[in-house]
Amino acid sequence: MKQLSQIQSHSTQIEPQSKCPPLRAAVVPNEESADICSPREQHEWRDNLDKYFEESAGEMPAFAVVLTVNTGYLDFFVNWHRYFRMNSIQTNHVLIIIAEDSKIHRKLIAMFDSVESATIVLPGYDVANNSAHQNAEDYDSFKYKSLVSTRATHLLNLICILGATNDVAKKDIVIVYSDVDTVWVQDPFPSIQTLIGNGKSYDILAAVDDHDYWCVQDYYCTGFIVIAQSSASISFLSHWEKELKYTPQLNQPIFNTVLRSPMLPEIRHGGLGEIEFPPGRLYFDRWVEEGGYLERQKKRRSLVVHNNYIVGHDAKKKRFEEHGLWKHKKTLE
Image (cartoon, rainbow, N blue to C red; front, side):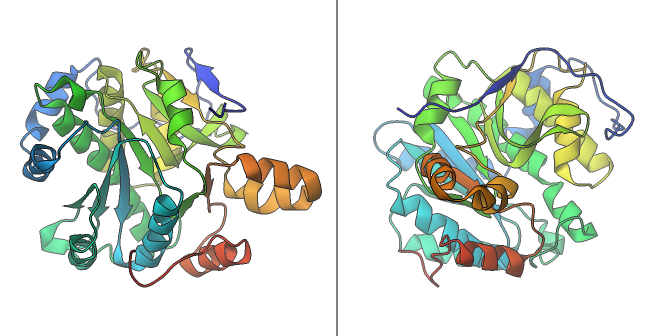
């Protein structure tokens, strides 16, 4: 089993500095996870998820892989999915796709109706305004901020619904959120299982984008997050959601601030190894500059590559193409 090259454990809080995004939402300190989840347990997704698990035969999945997709990034999802299937992910899992607009919702349902797979497609849009998030929005734009500010809500709804059951196995499902502009070049689950373990050593694991940035030693990336079902992770998601609802914003800076807030002293979080889960600044830039043996060795160990540190749908696509990571076709196989 592959071992991660680096994991940073954080049991102590990092003192915020003036440049960190401040916490603004009115939060309830030490709010019980049952109080947080109770209103969400009858969410519209409940019927879809209950039906899937009732109809599924065999072993309960160990992981729920979660992606959010809109119409503008459908081609990136198809590329992601081809890699996901091509690399023969062996660990028992369910794929949950959250559709951010009605057009992509219909397309995804049609796609997976003809493909036999462990997949659930859920609506993640406001019916009254279902076209608001159809386009491939640019990073840091107002519409981009509005779109990514829904992520905490989606993840919190999902973890609460999974926990609203007497089935102990369902409560042990680990959520793995992945941005659609990632490529899973190898199966990451064995490494994640080693870190999470049956004893749930961590509540939250995330890829690391940078160091000594935004006043933290390891600046986590919200493009790849592992979430164990625990009261601490539910409390964290609730605080993160409140901040994003208070002010739609880039979800990553406030993710890092909330995770290290004194309001969450019990949260166990850590960073995933940068070689196994490299950001774009390493995989596409620094390692290429190093070249030769070093580049080959590092890329051989990579599991999930994130096409970040570049802005725009077309620029991301071109970069994938230039590095041989674009296998998009019009339909799923």
